[in-house]
Length: 235
Image (cartoon, rainbow, N blue to C red; front, top):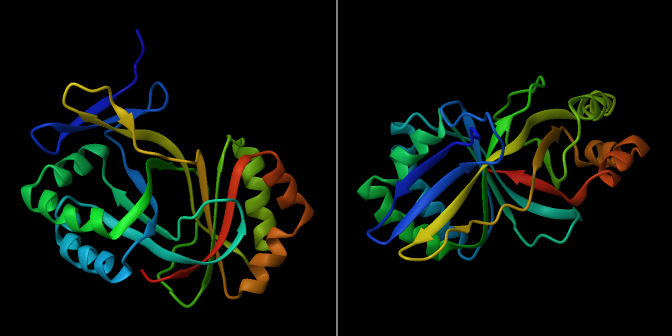
């Protein structure tokens, strides 16, 4: 008998979201960080949706910790241009959010505003990260498939400090969302990453020098489907 966990969320009469852990012994009762990675079809409409949704998000104990738009692609084939990371006390608090009638209604706006939507719940890795709300800093996202050991990730985090680059967030995808329509098999919402690293610095030049370091290039070479991009932060 395995110990995979699953949470079911009823979003309409015929549609259910199933949130399933990727591995055994992952708890859906602990803090998670939802990674939203997508293309905005209509940025104004998406920002309007955010304004409508924020109170409901806060009411379940969740907090958006980062929102940024890609301004330069460095590596990878992704077309997504927007990254939003939201901290939830647990997956069950996310369930409480999306099952609210008001949130179901305004989600229609989000659907019209975005496309190529990737989504997964991540667990924060046990590294010291530097908290900041400074939107004037330069940020870089690196997500990839495959998993590095904690020791390997620690090497690049230590390397970053030599370039005055700091770690904002490091997470591993721990659970995925599946859509189940009536009488059909569940279909997973795409999540094209296993790990995500979010860096920041005072200048783009510092980030680029860090990324060009031989050790970081070796780190990238040991992954698959790596994506790297520079972001302008708005939240």
